Image (cartoon, rainbow, N blue to C red; front, side, top):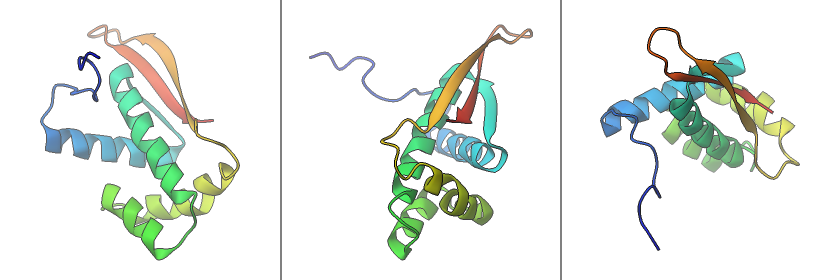
Length: 119
C-alpha cells in the first residue's frame, strides 16, 4: 500500500499556523452558519467541524466539553452554540454534517473557492 497522499493537506503553512487557521475557520462556520474560503481550506475545516460535532453529540457533560475546548480553546460562545444548537440537530445523523459547494475561481489569483455550510 502506498503512503502517498494519505495524510492531511499542508496548506503551505507551518503546523501552528494551520492549527490556528483551522480553529478560526471552524469558529466562523459555527457562529455564522457558513464559510467561504479556498477549496482545500474548506475541506480541512469541514473535517475538523465534523469531528467537533461528533464529540458534541455525545452530550453536554464535563468530558465532552473538555474535549471540544481543547480543539477550540479561545471562543467560549462558539462552544456553547455548538452544544446547544448545532449538535442536537444531528443527534440521529450518522456523520456528514457539512457540505462543501464549489463556487468557481477567485478573480485575483484563480484560486478555487468553496462554501462550507451545515447540512
